[in-house]
Length: 103
Image (tube, rainbow, N blue to C red; front, side, top):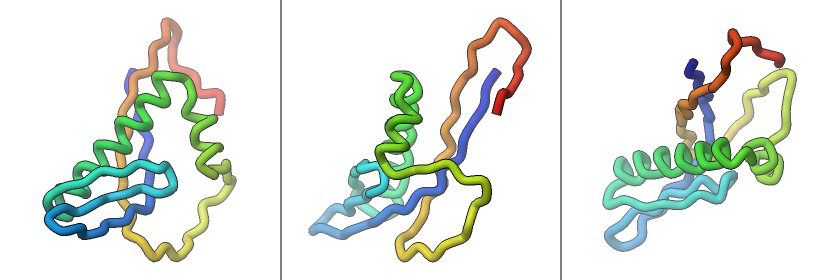
């Protein structure tokens, strides 16, 4: 069985000479590219790898809490001055029994 999560995260882009630095401050993930489009693609990939490594290590919940994430019952729209990216995180759920969500 496969599942996925979508993270909508704030990112910042900064031009430095001939490269564009892309950062996701909330997760402390940074990468670069030659253009804004390449930097955007690279930050999505870097965030995906970061989250997948946390899932593999069993530390995702702890890492997200450390980064300031909290659980909410209702999503609120708030004004963010930085651009946001949507990152699809695919993962596989390994189970011998039929899928049951205990959320």
